[in-house]
Image (spheres, one colour):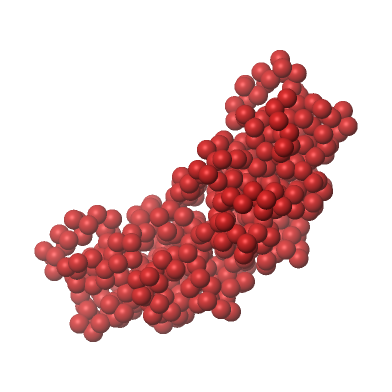
Length: 238
Length: 238
């Protein structure tokens, strides 16, 4: 088995997705929210790049979640805080979501054999899932508007640490991610709080969200993309 | 002053080059060769993406150096080993060179206020030059066919270690590079020898070159791009 990492969605063209499991990661905050939602009983989450298409899902009784540049959008049912996704009344409901970076990374990963949603919140669950599947893995980091970001790279490193050497590191990007994670893992929160993306988000007063998104193994769930919708792995289409 | 890093030339569109000094790096081996050449008395090195344009420089008494996928090209005067560039008879001569990744990175950096050639071989010279210039810096890593590679990322980290905190880290890419360098600097050669790019190159029997390219401060020279040709900084056009 091999493990590779694509640290920006703009580099996806250099990777083959065929026959691979793509683990999409957008720690702040799309894939953390998806993990929290699916882990809290949300039955499906449908990501949209396009705002209008997202809003149309109201007709099908989806709740609408949205964020642009880190802020909740007016008139939406949920924002992009993982806490929004853990509310009791969401159990069994479906959510349509539009986000800045996470949705792009999911869209660009669709050619993969399977798309898995990864975050620190379900790190061990994803690790075990990939070990069982025994397929080549590509970690696809959402980054920030095409640039590499620290928190997604750290997740790639954390997953590489758990899977290597069982999975061979295919290229240098996972080596870089792994070294970064090893150097920072003992004070992950401090490092991420000082990263450029977190500094931007702190202006929006979401340091509570950032802390939560760096918690490890809050949920034993593996959300996967099935027919364009994110659902718990193993649960067939409803 | 600020410092940013672009870990693949394919991400250059996300960076502004205006008013910045671009430090182009292709450790294995283009910018190491350029440093060794200029440091050994070569008077100018002209990089070409296009093979035919490169060959035409023979008419102007340039020596021709070339490499594709790590191998020397037939009929060329020099290959892409730094040792080729340090021969006595090259003193005062000019070289036209075509390489796989390094030339692309130089081409894509031309909008910068100044293009500097960086390598471990001239790390301190480049560091001091940037400190004197007091301008925002973008490190442009050549990578490997658009992907991130370890050795160029490590150079970005080494330069960041020397310039930070005098230069503020602008985005997360230099943070990632710095953490990678800190984790590997005590056994740089082992890590690079196990990187994907070096493993490819070892098939070509160039471990001697790789060792040389990781030596620090062999030359006290800063090659810069002037009218499309690389020359020692401070020397005006001949």
